[in-house]
Length: 253
Image 1 (cartoon, helix red, strand yellow):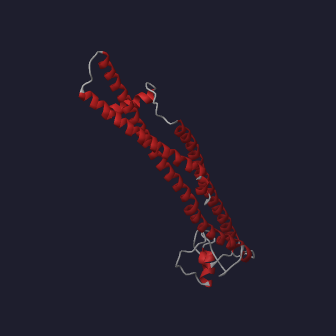
Image 2 (cartoon, rainbow, N blue to C red; image 1 turned 90 degrees about the vertical axis):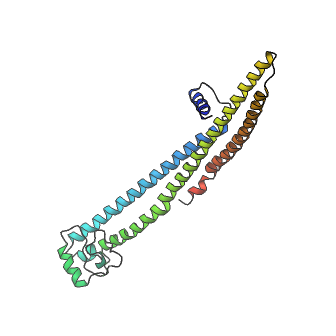
Image 3 (spheres, rainbow, N blue to C red; image 1 turned 120 degrees about the horizontal axis):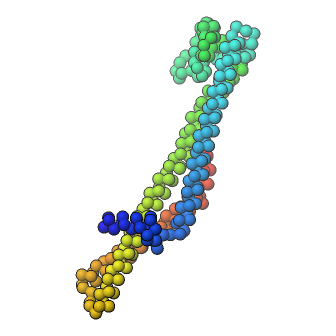
């Protein structure tokens, strides 16, 4: 039985036997869905690129703040340009570790001088409003936004594509299996009918075994056709819904 199915598949792929049971409408929907899937994957790649670009810009802006901080230490510009919160002392991005207590003002001044030549950020005032402080605070908020961006946009879009792709591919494979089964029984019934006709043209009667075999395969053909047509109809409806109502899944983005 398995060998017969393989022969049917090979003949169909090589063009030696053309299937009469391929749905042209399903074929058209598959082509539309293929383009829809490409567009969705392109959207995900652009979202990822946008996220990477935002992260790179946030880092470059932070680097400017760190440079201003380092250059204005012990200068008249420190308070308006480079001063930053004490909670940012010794950090590399201005964000204190959760639960960590900020240093005292005296410790901040000492650390300020000790780290002026390093890449870490140094502070003076407890609650400054300098250029560097504003950008450090902005960077802190941006890190939170990045996490939410990944969770609510990137992950959402990736899950959307993955779930659709998995379901559609699974259904298409099953539809192809049902189509091969239908082709197999259709061909088998045709061959059995030919054999029966040849027997009768010779003036002989078809054996009971031959009649039973033909009836069994005719019933299998009826069942295979019904199952194939029903599944293909449901699959077409599913593909239509994906493309016609896809904007509702896109809307949250």
